[in-house]
Amino acid sequence: MKRMPKRGRGPPNRSRRCYGWAGGAGRTAERLGRPDGVLIVDDTGFLKKETIRMTTDTTSPPQISSRQRLILFVLLGAGFMLSVDFSILNVALPQVGAGVGLGLTGLPWIVSAYALPAAGFTLLFGRMADLFGRRRLFLSGMVLLAGASLLGGFAANPETLLAARALQGFATAMTIPAALSLLTTTFTEGATRERVLGLNGALLSGGFTVGALVGGTLVSLLSWRAAFFINVPVALAILLLTPFLISETSVSGRVKLDLPGAVTVTGGLLAVIYAVIEKSLPLAIVGVLLLAAFWMIELRSPAPLAPLRILKRPTVKWGNYAGLVIFTMEPAMIFLMTLYLQKVLGFSPLATGLIFGVPGLASVAAGVIAGRFIGRFGYRNVLVAGLSVQGLATLPLVFLGADRMALAVLVPALFIGFFGHVTAIVAYTVTGTSGLPDEEQGLATGLTSMTQQVAITAGIPILSSVAATQSVELTGIHLALSVNVAVTLVSVVFIWFGLRPRGERRTAVAAVPVPKEADTQLAASSD
Image (cartoon, rainbow, N blue to C red):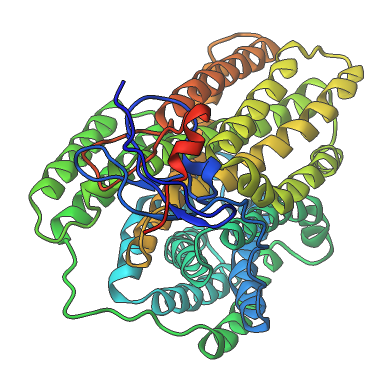
C-alpha cells in the first residue's frame, strides 16, 4: 500500500490542507466535512491541496424568499393543474365518449391521442427550452393548453375532441420539462432543490388523488365539458403572473437545433409508444431502428440534441431507468387493482375512488418529506429504498382473494406502496437532474419527463397483456402483479450497483476513500 506524504500537524480545530493517496476502498471524504463527499485528486492519484473544514457542517439550507415562493406557486400550480385534469378525464371517459358520439371501442383513443405527443415530444421540447428559452416555452405551452381546453370543451364530434386531446398532449410536452427546468435553475442543487422537488412530487400526487376523488362529482354536477374548461382560468392566471416573476433564460450566441436528431428521436418514440398501444411488432421494429439512427446521429453531430456524454452519465442513465420502472409498474398496478375492485369485488366507481383516495394521502406526505430524506441519506439510498417499498408493498396483492375481506390487506398495502412510490419519484428526479449545469437542465428535465410519460403509456398495456394470458380474470391479475414485483425488485439491484460511487483516477474529481486510521494523517498542516 502506498503511504501518504507526512506533513507537520497544523493547529487543532481549524481548516486544514491535506494530501493523500486516492486508491483503495472505504469511506469517502464525506467524513471530513465535504458536503459532496469528494476530494480533488490529480492525474497521479494524489490529493491536491484542498482546504477542508474538519468540523461537521450544520448550516441550515438557505431560506426561500418571497419571490421564490411565488415562483413555486406558479410552477407547481401548473403541474398540479395538469395532473388533476389528467385524472378527471380518466374518470370521465365514458361520459366524454358518449357526449361526442364516440363508441366504447374508441374510448382508448381519448387517452392515446394525449399520450402520444406528451411522450414523443417531451425530450425535444426539453432541449428546445435550453436553446430558445425556458420561460418562452413554458408560456407557449400554457397558451396552447388554454386553447386546446376550450376546443375540447366545445367539441361536438369525435374528430374535434381527439384533436383537442392531441393538442393538450403537445402542451404537456412543452410545459412539464420547461417548468421543471425553471425549478431546477431557480433553486441551486442541494437541500433547497430537494425540498422543492419533494413539494413538486407531493402536488403531482395530490393532483391525481384530487382528480380521482372529485372527478366523478364534478362531471355529475356540471358536465364532462367542465373537465376541459377547468384548465382555462388557471392557465390564464399563470400566463398573467409568469412574466412578472420569472425572467427569461439567456441564450449565448446563435443556437442551432439538431434537426436530424430531433426527427429520429421523436419518430422513434412515437413509433414505439404506438406499437405498445396497438401491439404492433412492425411498428416496434421501426421505432427501434429510428432510435438507433438517433444514437448514430448524436455521435457525429457537432451540436447534438442530446449529447451522449450526458446520456452516459450514471445519474442520468440509471436515474431515468429507475423512473421507467417506477412509472411503468405503479400505474399498471393501480389499473389492475381498479379492475379487481370493480369486476372481482363488485365495488362501484365512486367506492373505488374512495378506496384509492385514502391511501393517496400517504403519497402527499411522502412528497413533503422525501427531500429531507435525500438530504440526510443521499439520493441513491432513498431511490433504492423507495422503489423497494413500492415493489414489496405490491407483493401481498398477489395473494388477494375474491372476498371483500381482502380490503384489510389491500388498503394498508396501497398506503405503504404509495408512500414508497412518491419517495422514489422525488429521488429519481433529483438523481436525473443532479450534477448538470443550468444550460443542460432543460435536457435533463426533458429526459425525466419523457421517461415518465413513456412509462405511464406503456405500463398498462404491457401488464394488461400479461393478465390477458389467463382465462380467469383474478388469476391473470395475480400473474401480472407477480411480474410487477419481480421486475421492480430486480431493477432495485441494478440501480443500486449502477449508482455506486466510482473512484476514477483519471478524472479531475474522484471519491477518495479515507480509512479511519488515516484520519490524523489526512489532517495535514497548512502552509
